[in-house]
Image 1 (cartoon, chains in turn blue, yellow):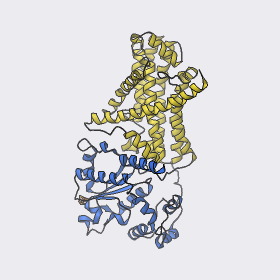
Image 2: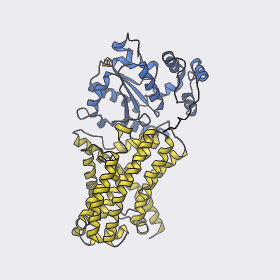
Image 3: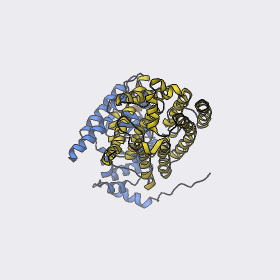
Image 4: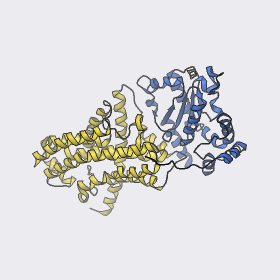
Amino acid sequence: MSRVFDELTNFARARSLFILHYCTGCGAIELPPVMTSRFDMERLGVSPMVTPRQADILLVTGYVSIKTLKRVMLTYEQMGSPKYVIGICSCTVNGGMYWQSYATAKRLDEYMPVDLYIAGCMPRPEAVISGLRELMKKIEQGEANSWKEYYRNYDYYLGNQQHLFGDQWQTPVDVIGEAEHYGLVGDGTRGEHTALLEQVQHPLKPLEMRL
Amino acid sequence: MMLSELLLELVLMPLVAFLVGLMMVLWMRRLGARIQRRVGPPLLQPLYDVIKLFGKETQISHGILHDIGIVMAMGGYIAAETLLPVPGMDGIAAYGGIITLTYLMMIPSLGLALGVGQCANPNGSIGISRALTAMLAYDIPFVIVVFGVAYHAGSANLIEIIDAQQQAGVRGWGIFEMPLLAIAGLITLQGSLGKQPFEVYVAPAEIATGPMVEMGGKYLGGLFVMQAFQFYTTAVLYTALFLGGAESWTALLLKSFLVLTIPLSLAYLFPRYRIEDLVRLLWKWPVMIGLLGVAFVL
Ligand code: SF4
């Protein structure tokens, strides 16, 4: 019975995807044609959403500078699971033509688990659509579980983030707490980097209200 | 009426409303797609959305009021459905009347205000303050319209209002007897659905969908369900007041979808107003037309 239910939700998940297009680089320019009349992604059940809480897919469209990557991380951690990350453009795969730049993060999957890459500089809308179809196939078969990786190997991802952003790096989301709550603690959840985080972490305070 | 029959109706009416509401949401999206020369979503899209949202594995709650707010938003409409007579089912419409219905239709906005307040998101707070202002704006013409219709029919009971229209035939429908009130009602309908040009509180590009900004998973799912109910309630209420209700379900579906098509197709043609323009416009035109209509009825 629970298997039937799982399959039903997977079926529905694959057909209803809300994307948060975090338009980081030049690849973002290919998204408007994907959304509008010409290629119309709504016929696949994909529609744009504006806040991380509502979205299922985080589209990272192009190179991410270090400053931007911080925002991408904040966004990613606020999304509700199951969540999927798609890296569009070669720049997210290996740095692309920004390989020698001092200011961009080279590989996206060092900082967050990526479900699917759509390579190209920049990929055509057809490629984006076929990438989305690929992701839908994976979701329907229950294989798109990379969001669990983030909880299981949090130490690895946090380590790379600290390497880039400095040791003081912290986000408002308590990833370890969430992993414990949902039973997703793995071997890599805790480690030296999370120990460092616990040392420097200062608790979140409510914002001061001022007129 | 037997008690068991009544209980069955009370369960069945919201259920049917939910299914028809989902169809209306689909109709809205398909209509938008057609106007923009797109294909649009597949047939079961609204259902997939709702299942997916309720099937999310991590849910972020901001506290007890957040949960209660969503329940109130859905519950207000579910209660309203039992007061809306549809062919074959009257529910408790005979005891409630249209005034109770008017009150019940305000509960969702208030519930949303509670829930959003606890999320403490500035965009959400702006959104909900705009939503309440908009409610203030469209409720005045709405009350005028409802008063006019009830005065004309000599009763605040929806069943009697529908019966009177049906006995008088097509010429006796509210829309022919009270055309001014019907026009004012249509403008109010646009406001209460919160569609462009009155879409001030969702405004995705400006305040990131306002009240929905912190809603994910089952909370957003609840709001999707609420939207389905909202479409159904407003369209069926307008049908009951001005289009003579309906004898059969085919007629009801035809009429209510027709009613809904007008505001929805306008919505895809217009950008939106600012909030003060909305209040000014809604307090001027529908109120004036409505008062004139009431004067004719009196
Ligand atoms: S891959 Fe090319 S198009 Fe895409 S972000 Fe990099 S430089 Fe821009």
